[in-house]
Image (cartoon, rainbow, N blue to C red; front, side, top):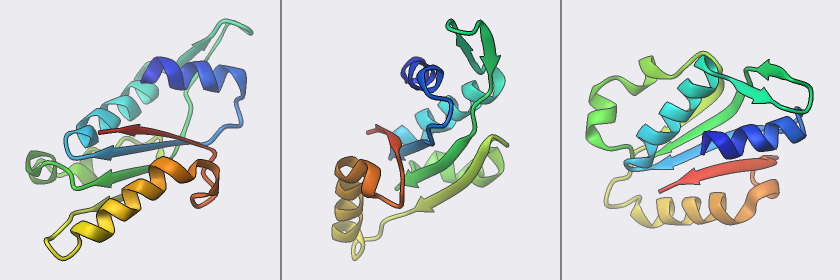
Amino acid sequence: MKKKICEDFCKDHSIQINLVGWSRGVVIVMEVAEELEDDGCCCKKDKKKYYPTVNWMGLFDAVDMTVTWGWANNITSNVKNASHIKKSKKQKAALSWMIDQVKNAGVQMRGMRKSYYVK
């Protein structure tokens, strides 16, 4: 996923990077944000290394171990905004609807221009 993000970023440095993870995917998007902060993106076109900012990281129904490890304390400093939604039985339908919106809306979802979704 980081490779694809870096390819897109190197083509257009103005893109907004939004990472969305559901369940165990939360661990993956947190790792990708960390890799972007630590390793950055090497752009072949101008032969420079950039450290892109993550505009928003959406964490949906994170696995319990992520929450008990203190996910909020582990979000890297290159993430400007992060949200965590944990579903209950009553919220299950609403969460499914929200995930569908994130996957399908793309540009129209809160002005997001690029979202990378991991399930």
